[in-house]
Length: 376
Image (cartoon, rainbow, N blue to C red; front, side, top):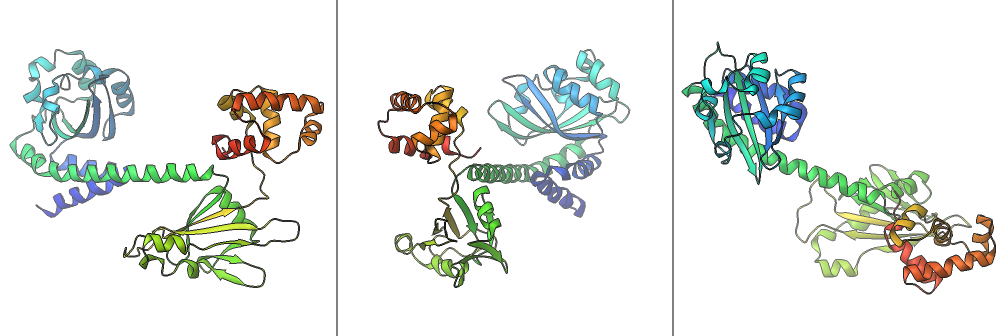
C-alpha cells in the first residue's frame, strides 16, 4: 500500500477518535477515488430515517433536507440487501440503473441540483436495523466509478472498519467516563482518584470544595497532602506498595483515619482504597487509589421537590422532611417554617405512614442514603 493510502488509513483511525479531524481525511479519501463529494452516513431501516454524519462538499441546506425529508426517498437504500454486509462495496449502477434513478424525485430534487449522479458505496458497519456506510459522489460528466476505484475501496475498507470500531469503542469509553464523573459529582461524599505518585486525576464537586478550602486537604508538588496541624503527609506514602498485595490483605490494610480541624468543626473522615490489581503494572495517569472524604459539617441538601416525587409527600410534608434531614429538631422546624409545633408533628406522622418508617432517625437514614440525598 502506498504512503498516501497508509496516511488515509491512519487518518481514518485518528478521525474515528476525534470527529474534528474528519474533513481533511474525507477529502483525502475523495481524492483517492476521484470523487467530488464524500460522506459517512447512517440509515435506520426500522424507522426509514438517516443522516449524513460527516461530509465534505455537500451544502448545509442539502444536508438538513436529507435528514428531514430525503433519507426515506434514497432509492439506493431502498435496496436493503446491498447494505446488509459490512465490507461490501457497490457502485450506484449496480444497485439502481441510471435510467431508473433519473426518473425519481430523489434524483430530480436532491441529486440533480447538486450535479451528482454516479456514486460509490462501502458498508462500514451494520448493527441491527442501522447501517453505517461511506458514500462518494461524482457528476454525470465525470463518469461512473471504475474498477480501479472499486478495488481501492475494497482494499481500504477492512482497515477503515477496524478504525471505525476502535473509534466507537473509544467514544463509548469516553462517554462512560464522563457520565461516571457526572454521577460522582452529585454524591454528598468527597471522592478523589489518585495516581501512583499521589497526583489527583479526578475529584468530584464535594471533594473539590473541601480541597479548595486548604484546611485539611491540599494539592502541592503535584500530589495530594493531608494536614494534621502538627505535620503534613503525602497521600503517595499512603498508597505506595499497594499494587503488590492481594485484595484480601489490602482490604485489611486500607488506610482510614479522621483529621481534626479548627475548634467548633467536626473532624474529616478519610478512607483510602487501592484499586490496582495484584502484579498489575503501574501506568502513568491511571488511578491506583480512591480517596473517600466525609465532612459532617457540610449540610445535607435535600430537594423538597424530589422528596415529593419519590415518596409521594405533600409540599408541606417535604419541607418538614428536608429540614429534619439537615439536623433540625422539631421545634426548630416549626420556627423555620412559621407553623405550630403540633402541625409539624402531624406532618411527621403522615410522612412516617407514606415512607414506611416509624422513627425520626429511621426516616433521616432513609433520606440521606436514597436518591433524595444526591446534590443535583
